[in-house]
Length: 89
Image 1 (cartoon, rainbow, N blue to C red):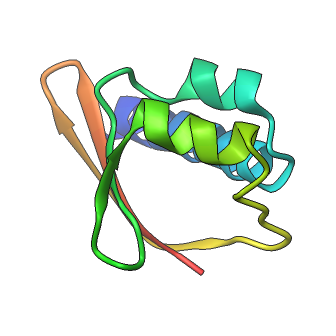
Image 2: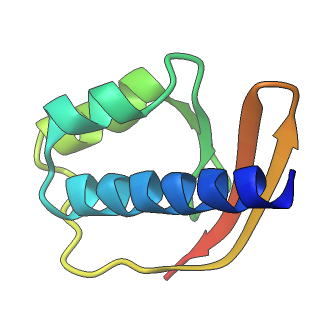
């Protein structure tokens, strides 16, 4: 089980890096592919936004990210789902 979990963690972290790259490049198509349709995301001011709202900020040019990194990764598996918690800087 540990080997399978390790491989899954590596795959998840690789996908997470793809997500960060898409954010930096404002790649709306890649973000649309990677983000779950039911995404809820808490932004810095405490507001909760949806996937549609998030994509629109990139599409409109209102969101521009020049640098982003993730720390404090915590990955948990619940049945066939991986839940990842992290801090963006």
